[in-house]
Image 1 (cartoon, one colour):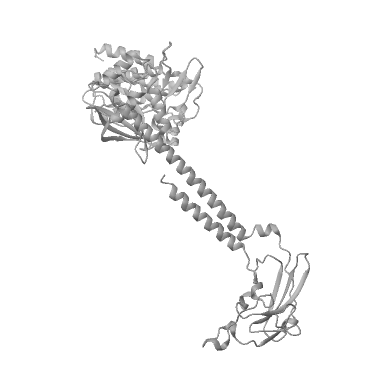
Image 2 (cartoon, rainbow, N blue to C red):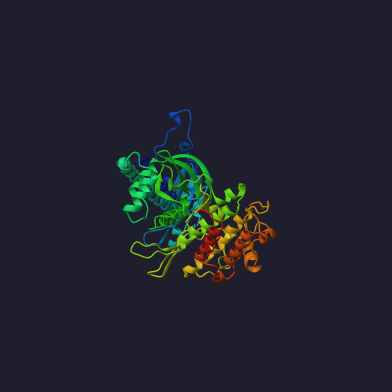
Length: 532
């Protein structure tokens, strides 16, 4: 395993730290430096060599000795080439004993300072005149508090060393374990996919696979095994979009174009929610983005969360309206298809294989895609809310994302929305839908006049409005997007203005339901003899 050398190095490092910490705590015992300890010093004779070391110099200082007298002492007198000393120390019974003697030259300056961490209580004093130590009266230091010793810098260094070692070893162990586990899972994942390579026969198109799954299963999408196989076989062509959730790529599966939404790892909750919503029973609808597959792909250094859907080359409604104008028929076709999609989402289908009611919560022109036939489809269901009528519970996603501030309903901005009441989310969608209709209507040509494409409230708030900006405009001032005078002179735009005004009412209860909007638009489509 690649982490094994790291573990060995960490263990060696920890041992060095502990040894060093122990070494710091250990005080040196100076007794080997004192004459009269029972060990004779083998000194060199001056005539043995041309150079005389300091410790071999002739003795010239006489000292009084008691308790530390060498073997050659006479009448409690000793001689040294170093210094005289007196030392007081505490014996095993806690009694103070005063002794004195001669100290060798070697290390005498250092030894006379003694060690502050000696293991017994003692004090040593030195002097350098004959018999000067007879008058020395060293005193014992105050008793050392055990708690203060353990709270000392040396003990703290020891504790820190041990803590660092333990934490390092634990971290390395955990990293090694999860790396091993990740590699094992990855190998097993790729082994499973290799076994599934031949699962989809050559010649089967995505449309064929989806039609088969719709007729032979519960209508909740392709089997998981098929989805994983498709995800592995997709070839990424180029990036075609990027948002706060991740990136969108154009991909190819056996020559067919698909859109691949690659979520950032931090957006796992959004990926999971969108995948869950798309695979809801009876979710598939011509005006809701066609779901193909979802999978988690490990690429070595990081993980990709993939959502594979139909590809629409015209892009989003936002992009389409920037460069394309509409006539009355195109406007009604777009508005009606968006209403059909929202109506399918909001409607609960009862039965053993029923569909729950769903609220989108992030409707905007960038989340609606243009189809080749002039209709549109709703996408981006990462914030969607489901309603279970059997338990009367609102299933809100765990994602930390919130909707787009510019399209938020007054009750969302004012934080008065009842989160436990599903109808409140439905009505917030209706408000957002009305702003999208306003964007469409601006691009409808009447009498040779048309406005350029703008986002709602473009002249009232900054390009990236804050929550407070929108709250001030929508709730406090009660303003709504402005309309041109030409709208009142055209029958279709006048009807659309009435419709959107009833959808962006401040009071949610006063807004139209999406079913009523759909029926109203259906009548207008019929009167214009438009084929949807």
